Length: 612
Image 1 (spheres, helix red, strand yellow):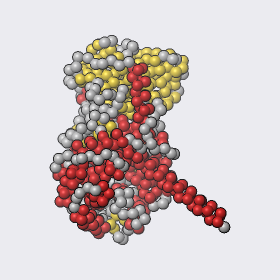
Image 2 (tube, helix red, strand yellow):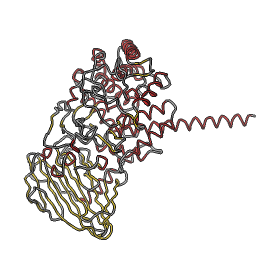
Image 3 (cartoon, rainbow, N blue to C red):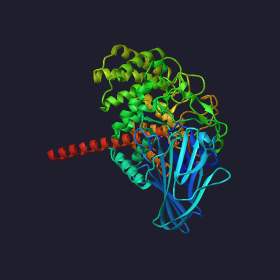
Image 4 (cartoon, rainbow, N blue to C red):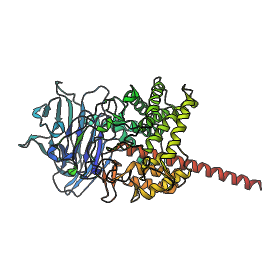
């Protein structure tokens, strides 16, 4: 059985990434891209479905792990009765245009001597294909269809009857035993060998150089930089697309059918991600993400999707693979995501907000962005009154979700601001009339006057955590009684053990069986909302508690089970890490503003005292 979700660390090269367990087993890796078929899939089944283990033979006294400074290089330390050793795991950061992926594992002896073993189970095509393995260049090479993998190591590796490659070795203090696993297209005659030690030095230097560009400082810099590095490892650098998560089919509730493929790029993530990148000083990454966004959304607005592939691919057909048993028996295992065919009106507002944010932060204007936005608004005018599947991609009947209507309002609001602030041309008066009409409808049909709260959809009694974003997008000011009432209602009705659920998970709520964890991003939204209404201490307390839910490497999944005290959902989750960055930046900004106000008051008191 695979390890708990939070027991994994991520290593990546901005093309793909792998999950490494505490035990030293790589249980998930797709090659050569995030959305390719897996080579190691033990995460969704058992070791026989593919993994690469390096671990001590003798019982462990203790184990610890950490990232090597502000990098994506993972170090796992093992202590046995005979000595200490560490495994340095990383993927070489690829150059543009390269078609080879190098995963390197260095076993270094720290004290005494440690007996080690390795076990390699290669299974292509999501564990359906056993490759042809033969000796080549002093190590095994495995070939199946378009894939070839070459291993280079001084350790003698041998095959077993169950199609596994194994080896044993001993590492002495001060000694390093290297392993290199290189993927390349099988039709190429050979791969390019890289010295593992030189590659480690080069990779570490590039990571430290990248991390040094972070401009955010303060109390939560460690959490910010680890989240930024995680977002970097979830970025497909050839296009700038950022995947929602590394994995597919990790359950939102153990044993449930809420298992989705998140190895795609969501338009919904665009604004929050742009804010995170721009506020922390990563303009090049923000620019690449904006350009990906514009290419993906190009075409007739009626064909705009809520998500796309890494390069903007539109056909993300969902299917199930029955031969994988799923994470802790959570079936089905899904490849692709049928939600790409849904109508979700909020994404038009998120696209407009993202492009407006790029302008606000001074990112160079794109000559094509405004014409794209005007076309989007012309189409949105014709559909904003229709029901949709909403931000949470329900698989039930479409509804008039309040947040979808709010984001339609945001779309026209940002267009008006673009005319006013940046001199773009457009029918400002007409857009202003549409903005007023949408606002009036939301306040009439999406607000429960009796309970003084906005509701999930028109006519509903249930709440939705996305309502916490209403003041953050500027629909109403934080001090508005309707906002205060909504925040109070969310705290009263959606909070479980201090954390926020997306909406009540009841029969018929979303077309799926009930049951899921609390959604971590929503709890960050509550922290932001509390800060906005002046409850800064409560906001910081909630933020600090959320940070404490990260694993020992600073990583978060999508959801959390407050009863079982474990992470749930796909991992690591870009939405959660973007929320860490934005909330930390927001709280730090308020702290600075408070200090400035306090300093001004002190100067005023001193001035008054000196005048007496």
